[in-house]
Image (cartoon, rainbow, N blue to C red; front, side, top):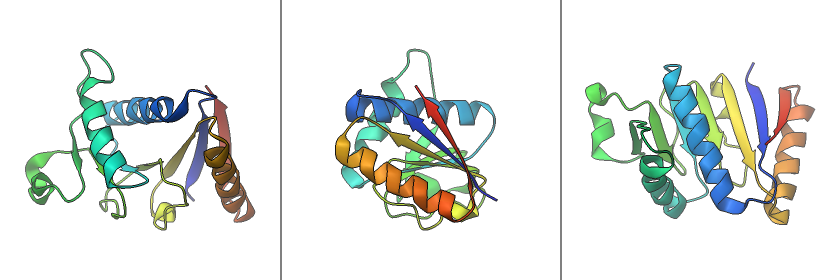
Length: 145
């Protein structure tokens, strides 16, 4: 059964959420996991693509945006894929959700990381997702950062 982890960033805003997503992706990459970062839309996907290159000095996380021609080459070795409205690759271990809703494919992966900041609307949407997972019997953990 899929494990669900909620990471609560406090009042850091959208930038804090995105930085947490980058750190989670980097950690998962270091463990040889395949990651799908599910964004709220194409603009956020493009922004996160740029942030993955600069969020930490000396850090490199091979990544691509879903729909990129590089992903068509199976030897590309991309372990982190960023997308909105795209399904994760079959071998995906972790979905990092920056979207507003429960990803429809969440139950096909080992783990989902929900990243929540202090924005009242996003916090309430996060509470609804928490209840959704819990009410369906999923193991849900909360981590305050």
